[in-house]
Image 1 (cartoon, helix red, strand yellow):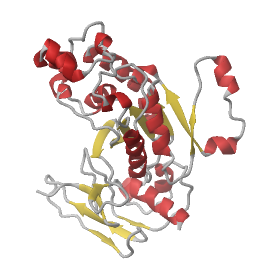
Image 2: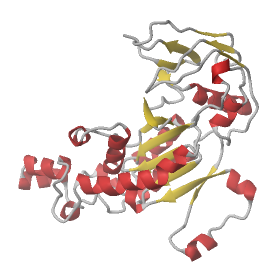
Image 3: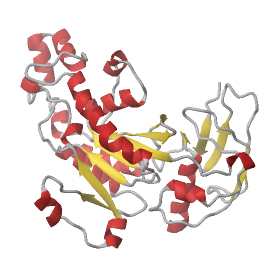
Length: 342
């Protein structure tokens, strides 16, 4: 059964019919690899895919710093029942940090502030290339250096050429001393907001110990219980449930309102804090949360629209020949980047 959604394949775009839709949908285009003029006959399919009614698309003018919905607002060729403004559609990128120096040594890291390895730096740069065509307005990281390094290195690869700026908001003096007084500089910056609530799960008495040695000392089942159970913490540490309460709580209070207001958000954090956020986004059970695995330095894309999060997977690298699902608005944003760099 074919999957549904707007796909990019070596610069070309294909649209597949949703299994529950009895009407076959077709996409026609006459200029590749960019979208120059496209005729669509597409309906909203529901969760996980983009939707467009009958329309003809031609090139529009806007800056890449603007929201992708600003681009779409210029496209007025909608059917009569779609004459109202389109609903907000925003991008959410989640990214686990690149390999840290304690990942490399197989040590429990938790809340210990450990930097990236050379491989971790390369993973962060590669991740940045994967998201270089996706709009980003604001960035959140944990208070730990490995997440901050990953965010900054990834953002240096973005095609809009904005400068990553770490916001210092610990106190009034820090805010004053790091104030930017140029509106132009602000416009061309990625604000990076640090939050301890996005930190990795605190592993207590296990931090700094070798995982294999601990398994040999206490048994694999005991270590698995400490690492994978939902409500059982390691000695003097946090349970996954405790980590979830702070990470998801912060996401709901600070990050979700940004998405609802039309901002595109990137979050660079850690395996456990991100696993709990993904559980919230995808409405998973605690049992499903326990089975989630996240690789270092691999970005995951979600689309927020009408109160729902639509999982899009991980964007492909610029040199990869593969099929990747794009919403129409993301395709328009990428087109604008292509035009400005040509």
